[in-house]
Picture (spheres, rainbow, N blue to C red):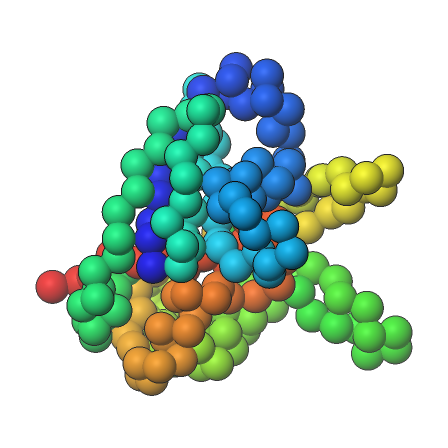
Length: 194
């Protein structure tokens, strides 16, 4: 896996018309040329660090740096996922299906968000240190796809975790957690704890 950090001034992002997570996804896909019909198999997150955007991009293929922004790529060490404990950060789109119509809707209550994160941890091979878990306020993120407007609920989770199932944990790191991964959600950012 390759982790890329991209820094782009907001003025340059505006000139490139990077206005939402859908347009970011399209721009990042250009870093993987010659694969027009392939699945878009990378994860990313965009952070607003005024006056810059900071983008993290995780991919199985080394991206080709583009003419915009400052790109730094490094290969993720084979041993990186062998630790037992990590500090983590996750920008997610927590959702649930409504019973009456099976439509996916965003979760916005603190209790609902905590349960969602605990469930995802169990599914993905890790246990949360619930005392350290910090849940950010839900934020609506609007995007335009063609002529249609769409909306996601964005929530930042951070804290400490302990790996319980190495294979599931590795899959979560590589494939992401939760829905809307093509829109900048699901990338599990990790920092090993000594």
